[in-house]
Length: 465
Image 1 (cartoon, rainbow, N blue to C red):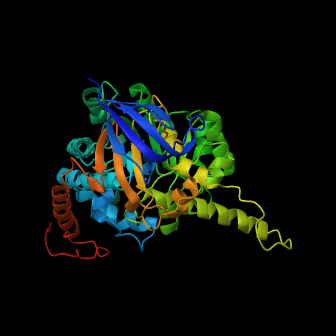
Image 2 (image 1 turned 180 degrees about the horizontal axis):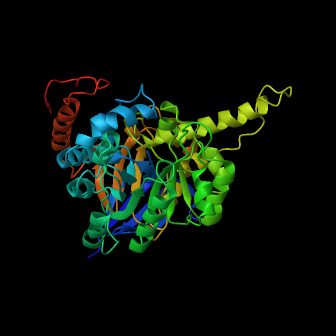
Image 3 (image 1 turned 45 degrees about the vertical axis):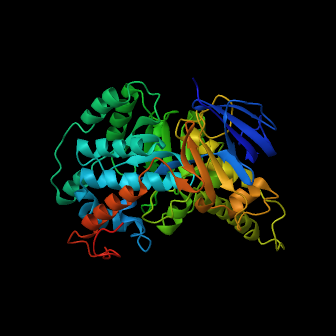
């Protein structure tokens, strides 16, 4: 018999224009899908979740992150991107064990769920061995988070590149096997894709070959693009466009230095784009492209990238993206020299900001038909925010309250595919103590490595629950 759950009496922000928002209403979940949203739903035999005093909304979608980097959380807050390239990657990441990857992804995915993130694009460029990819996937599946797992490069290979000892190998051999063995049905919580290096850091020939591999496998691709690397600009997207490589199966992340012309090329070819506002600014990589992405005719999406230099809270990302975009537009007005002292109209709204972390991010990672809104027929990935918390109370403007005030700490309940993973403020079916213990042990191993001058000692001398 199909399980039925009625989420009853909450304020509803559906993110579906056809469904709309309700000051008070119900959501009916049958099996793993939303089947009804309305003011009052009769479902006599359903399990009832009393949502009074909460805002019911779709789970947040993080359209670009690296969960394996949870192991060095906040270690790069005072670094720039090139510090990673010359220090943390070759001196720490290259030595991650598969066990370390499992522990870090387990903790990172649990943290995401706790903050109301029900779906992530996990860009896994720590595949030092096949086991690294397998342990990353195992951790994702154990937590029950929905994810687009992108099989990527090897940090050990990056170390070889630094030392001039790179060997030519078939880098996608295990990815092909993994696709065949682990993702044959393409209908589970975790879906597959490739994380390729792209023309910013490698050749167009290698980029073309990697894309051909992905298209042969029938899976989408993620690419880092548009990080400033000094004059002249790389114009990587333009070069891909001219080579006929762009398509609706590629997600580009960051796009800080990407030109408006290149963003329009993405819109023309159906590709998607994700900004990472907090980390882009923290690393000095450039200005968040959220608004420029929208202006080019794309659907702006946001991601956290990595907790090495961001909080990992998606409410913060959508808020930072919104505030930067408003500042950018105001500065453009003030720069005209006209006698103006304020902005007459806000062109980037709170609803657009919320879309960037829900329906737009779902679209960006090729899951828009499954998640991102409370639409009947979509998967039941749902979160409840406590509108009675002091930083949320009143909630006269539902969307404004979410975007302007909410944090992951306000998340009371989380459902993924109809299954509760958090209830009454506590994760369920995830052994938090075990995840914390494994993570601290991995952190101590990673931080204990010699030869990385930038790494501070751990807060505790040993693992502690």
